[in-house]
Image (cartoon, rainbow, N blue to C red):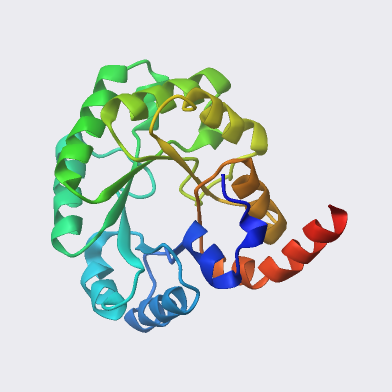
Length: 236
């Protein structure tokens, strides 16, 4: 495992998906944030739906920042067919990463066949795009978090993601349930909804095993990296 404190600010940017998710965001706001994502060398730039993906694709051309979006964001209650169609539209618009919101009501009702079906359809519709599944841990108990992660692993999705960031974010115990459930799989971990103080908490999740942090505060957190690294080094 890479020691993140051996990295510089540019390299640490690839641990962050920069998200501008309010659906009332304007085109100017989206374009400005895309430029920040390039400046901070983020892994991807996310909007709340594929509507803005062509604009994001235009802004990110020539950079290493992926065009990305949420699917059925933030509630995840659409049918599997509609979710797959939205995924196909996103990929056609240039998205290299797509995050679907799992049908949490179906999961909590024990309708695991419904969840498995929508995730398989999602992965198929995404093609070569990176797939991430949001399970919204704030609505789940420990057993439900573990079950959700197992269904993600069975689907072939690339990432399990804690939250949309629109509700209550995860605590470390919830994240560790995900990590322990997925430890013998190829599924990676993404955290969203990082609580205040964001820099300290974001880096704690990375140190605990998160490969990505999804947040609208990516510039703030990356700017704090040198300070956090200095504190960490002094303590060691």
